[in-house]
Amino acid sequence: MSHLRRDLFPVDPFSDDPTFQSVSLPRLPLHRRLLAKLRLWRERARTRKALAQVDERSLRDAGIAPAQAAFEANQPFWRRLGRLR
Image (cartoon, rainbow, N blue to C red; front, side, top):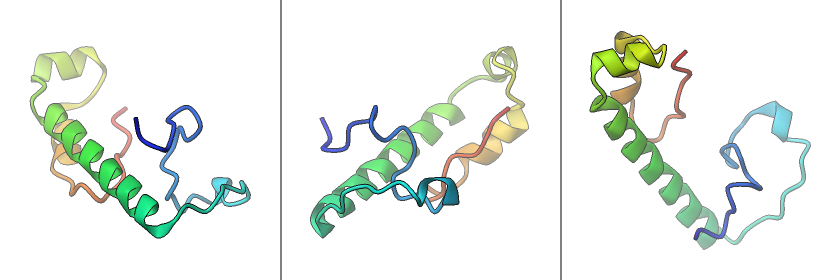
């Protein structure tokens, strides 16, 4: 289990979203922040790879446009996942 519990950080803790800038989080040591970032990037890459493998019918059943899914699946791992619906 990662040192960052997902239930405590439901969003990307490295986000520049101003909504979360007022929340005071403990500053982790540099090596732990780097590990967390690498884990986040690996998860994004896995998610995008899985999205690319979903067939069009299943995407449509989920209310996702196949073109939007293809666009998202081809984004680089360091970019945040976009909205599919």
